[in-house]
Image (tube, rainbow over all chains, first blue to last red; front, side, top):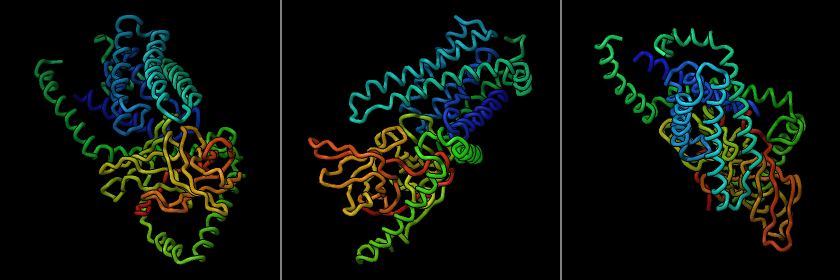
Length: 176
Length: 264
């Protein structure tokens, strides 16, 4: 219970930080997908299923505030979390930079591809030209920042692990 | 973990999440989050302001250098004020408009969250229906610069769509000799498109664009931007123009919501 409570509070702080601070930054820094990167890192490298819940929660928040690109971000982020869980459990080995980076990029590519497909078909019924350049700039920077963030988290892993263990979010090594 | 402890945990988790969901949808949690988000948003807007001044070419919404932009804004404000006063002196109807202006109800709000969408620019403010915010109300910054309209209102917060958002339309008029009317439309980029301007109207570059007051809840005279290019196709019934907003909404953290009933 305490673990869930702490992880929920940490999630709320992180999502508030992303939606309020990061999204207020100038380009290209505003595209930093902090919660997504933390979710992937928590799940893939630290072995905590809370990571998948954070990605699901991100979709819920985007829908609740109407801040996403689509009106059904929750569904896309649930699918992204499931892809991450599948890849993490069946394909990529945890604890490797390659595994963590791939498990970050592929669900994110799925999210971006979903947006792309939706807007590609939606743009047929619209008189306005679709801002494809803006869209690809956004998608490009999201993926770049995701890789950078995951790499930074990977480098700082020992410190993060000790902090999260103290907060009871990460199970101890023997339980993994 | 011992068996009784596991049972207690299993019983406590559902009520915990239920409580979080209830708090979330009742507005208590968003209000609480606003307390965390407000300082984050302020710092973010400040960083953007400093960054834009340091690296003007990196700004996504302005073509001009920061100093030129500030001069242009000051000039636009002066011109808008001058024109407004001139019209008000011309007839009683404009005087009435003036008094209506004086009775605007303002609600000051802070931006607590922003979208990162390249298509639809949306932000959340920490005022809702409990504070008197109404759907469709104009959201302004600085000295009457329109930056968006309230699209959704909850008890404690409101969603505002930027005028730059894709498909966001505003009834506008140009501050030229004939007070040309038209509609500005956001395209998801940093510029607005001016539509439905008849071919016989003269639209010039640097004409100031303000709200016309023909739209419910949006008072006249709010600054939208300046005309940067005009496209005339003799075969088309209307001419189109590109309008550049004079301010970057990302540099502002505090906004004002105008609650007024106007329109025809």
